[in-house]
Length: 132
Image (cartoon, rainbow, N blue to C red):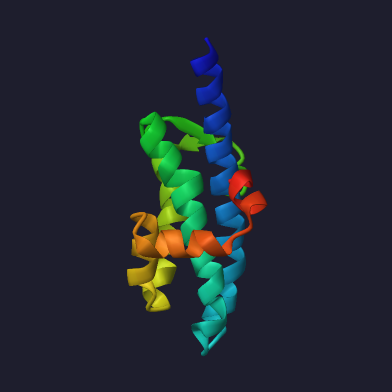
């Protein structure tokens, strides 16, 4: 019974992480589209990559939810949407932005929990990490 509730809480946390990612992505896309110097968005992209790994991918791997599962991510859609669609709007869009900013190597390394993930994590306050 406790495991059932934990899975439910974590599914809700997954939705919150995706929602937060989508907000950041929707804010950064117009700025990037109107900019010729992408360097100022490097840190934002690293934060998004870390959030994707810790808040989305870690949970997906731990709980092995079906990508057909329905999830509510209010900034993507007001109703229940397939997890695969929410994933494409968050992690998928992050990867598209990374290619545009020529940062796909470091973003992929963070998403794959490589050395860049742990280096970036060292820079974050413990309070921030716990909230993810």
